[in-house]
Length: 349
Image (cartoon, rainbow, N blue to C red; front, side, top):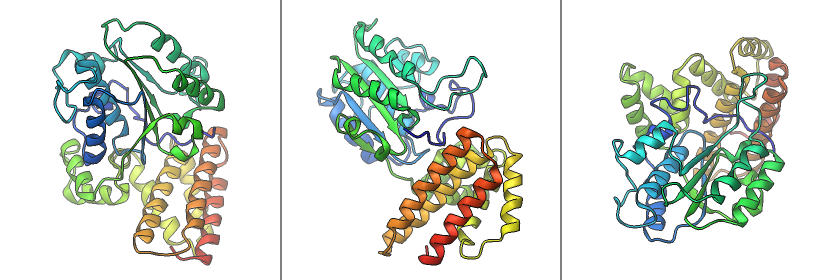
């Protein structure tokens, strides 16, 4: 399974104040939250949920919200209708500290050799589910596992996850987060109930940014919201370091696709090469900018969008390979520009 860019992963320590395990407000995803609440509070929730949507729209925040409720109230209607558990609740404190015995978070591990994140979510990580679900919860309640994200799994890990979904224990839930659910095994998708999260409205992104970045001017927040494509996570990335410059460059690459400036593109590649994780970040921003244009054209009833959708998937795969194999940034950017130019000359976007 191809590795995708880690668009949604927080750059800071996972126990920092902005991590989803410490986030208690879910912005703009009322429909998905209402669906999850009905299922959980009915007493008959699915044992596997696939939480899908673009990077940075709240998938992990929703997963932790569901987890806290199950660990606090179980699959009952005893708690609030919106699955809220207060931050000062003992369950919330344990979840925030990463020490609740009934919760397991599976992500890409840190390599002991390099001290950096591994390029895939390995089978060894997924196999931890068997032991976690195979033992009785220390509190006698529910056990919840969150996979963030399933897009990072290799083939062996995907098969191990499938086995876990085929033999679910009682009073256990598996929350599978994915930015690109279409790339998961069909058998994994069929064994999970789907929860789809959508890009947020610009006003919701601006409102969230006002809370998180109060020192930033309203004009700057509006610019970040526009470039984010409805993703709070991406907007926060844009606000740090070279993010805004990379996003604007990605926007220009698409805008000028019909008549690309080779010298400017080479200069961009050189600049990106000097930025830590620059290729990966640029690939994420390019994908988001392209997706926003495709969605706008689709809403306007434009034909011939399948080629653009396929191009976006190919660009995602190309940037993923470039990051994983540490390929030459200038060549990666040139290849992306060539592919965009070829499509733009055939069909306007």
